[in-house]
Length: 226
Ligand code: C5J
Image (cartoon, rainbow, N blue to C red; front, side, top):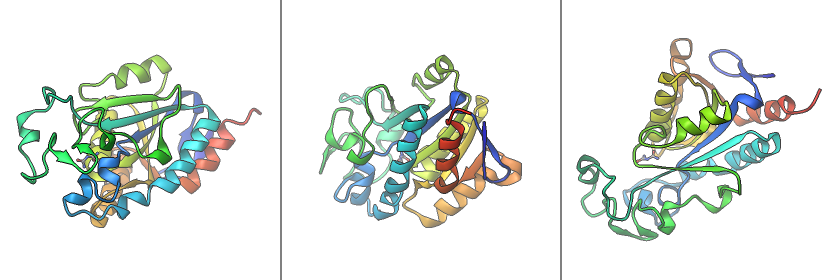
């Protein structure tokens, strides 16, 4: 066991009970010309997370901890998309509409998949989720239980939407979550700052926050045989 220097207190890292969760690092959200940019967002704010996250992913693979990737999206017939979600937002860019990288947020389309830099390798879990939270209508909790995981390193996009929703869901289910601050991204700098502050405020109301410079060496240390 190793301690990560984190807010509001050190976070105990135990590789055998910890998973790296990578939320929605999908082309639709991150690539220039994609869905995210078509809504007027600056995707470079999200792309900043790719480099640190690739390093963290390599460290997690080297440490042998469970790696879980998620993808937000829907079945081609949209039967798993509530009307309230479908009808929300810019009418010319709705879920299922044609986009630069295929139908927007539809499973199997190029834009729905994970960016090349963070592509899952064999043995890693990929959870397809219809909602913002990774626990809602998915097998995530069963997967974590079967693996004996109780502590999550949470990363991905966007900080205030799918990362936050997932951390809140996890917290209510009893998981200890550490959000890796430079491995999450928001289109809105203010939401990034406040979203991270909200995790560790009030004595860690939703969990812990640390940057990858603190987590990566701790992962290496924790997984080195004594
Ligand atoms: C959004 C997400 N922002 N993955 N999805 O709609 O955060």
